[in-house]
Image (tube, rainbow, N blue to C red; front, side):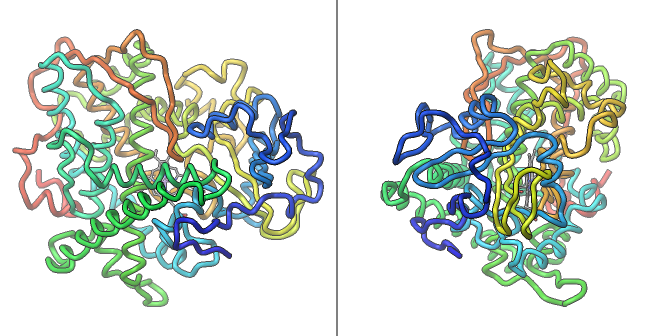
Length: 508
Ligand code: MNH
């Protein structure tokens, strides 16, 4: 097992599939294979996912690709994916992109191998941090950060500038997880350029992706050095943050946020605690996993809302009806935005911002009664294709239509056909956090602005393991007939105590 602590070690996920699939020959692959390089004709190293999607359309619900002497199996057919969701026979596989992040995130929650004891320990200690009560406690801080975004957008609107959607959504979601989870303020909205933490994070994500698309990591010597520097920067930032909390003490300061849980909570049964090294891994994990994908989801949603004025109008009418004149919507008023939530679901259907997850056989088994797999054999589930399968979603599967997520329509579909947050025990722990944050922010933005698309913009998607609409800018107009009052608290409205203590209510 390659527990990669050096950037150039070949991760475990890079073992090919040829060992584990006795009847591999029956799985289709692209024509015109090159002897040495495999299926690399027309491959764009910068968009491996979109590339794989193109092959998927040609080759069907399960297929394989060969790259650099290794064979990889991809799956997206609904029946196959539903079978892979059977936790008694399959589990998360830490491979490819996820394994490549081991040097950054080690045995943190996202990158831990199933057998590593720190997974269960951290899961049990941190899960209460995502309970309903905990979420209600984060709400005030989420509102406060959203207020910084609308302050910034108000200024751009007055100046007649288009807003940088992915840039601003990244600022928003980074500040949200940093503040709610760790009592930390990166000051993103006070900066012209992204915070160096974001630059270093994007560096490591991009590097982890590139490791999948170059034949030998040795070719990346310079990039590897850059990557080591990025990781060192992430570590330093996190160590400073943890040191500050330890100095300040847990009580009163974090008020039971994620960092307090990591530092102070013992496992309810075993009494075990996370080690200092593991806390560092978890903080990095949550700062990265807790903002990058939500930022993409919000950006794609704003793209679709700007392109579908009818959908935006319906969503806005709902916000008006549910929130009325309430300046600061309460925690319970967010979940009531059912249609806004459908907009998000439909966005994550077309562009699940973490677009793949890997599953491995826990024992020798036969996938969907057709493809024998040996214990340890694995496959990558391609969610953007699962989410566009016509047999499930209809002939208009490529179209944006939030009504697909009306309760009745959802019930009429087979289970395991919508998987933006992965599946099983290792599914996303931050799902409710992301959905609450994103619904709240979309509600606030719809209530305050009309979104005007740039007529020349064509959706282009950048990949760095996660997906993001590249270069998306929107023009804003102040909504006609709205009162001048603030949509969310501005920085000046915040009491310092409220800033620090997400658990102890909104203070109103
Ligand atoms: Mn999240 C796991 C998607 C928001 C923290 N997340 C996963 C997985 C997917 C995923 C898919 C499973 C990956 C795998 O099987 O290898 N996550 C998302 C999406 C959003 C998201 C699409 C937003 C939209 N995630 C968040 C937020 C947080 C978070 C917000 C934290 C606050 N996610 C995690 C962690 C894991 C994870 C931690 C790993 C959980 C585990 O393995 O125990």
